[in-house]
Length: 194
Image (tube, rainbow, N blue to C red; front, side, top):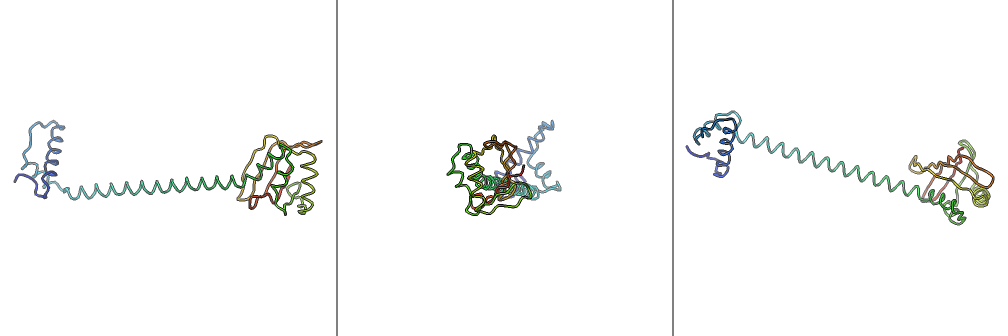
């Protein structure tokens, strides 16, 4: 009998050596012959082909699952980066406005608003017209040196930002709770919710 007849002498030698090692680990120091090995191998209900098939299926499945997990992680990372970039774009005119107010830079303050920007006091207050809002920015923010100390920013929707902090201007101070709407990189509305 001799070796297995599957066409690969190297595989036969390897399988035989593995069988020898297993027997030695179990404490059986008596070497087995190739005939005993072949008899054991071919009388066992599990054939090598079946074992190899299962091994390949498990190996392929683990690669597939790993690849799926990596794709999902990549998508999640991409989505988070995209959301962060959107938030930064949305926050930019609002943060620039707060910084311009702090440094009393009237031109930079005005530059953060769209031509049609509106403003209102309170959650239910009626919005001023665009012309009234421009006058209000001049009288209540620029001329009275309005500022927000320690502003905290929260993006609450795809085009809304809330700023909280301590608002103060000449002769006035109160906790700030401002709702800004931003479109196309400019502030389109400013609702002062105290």
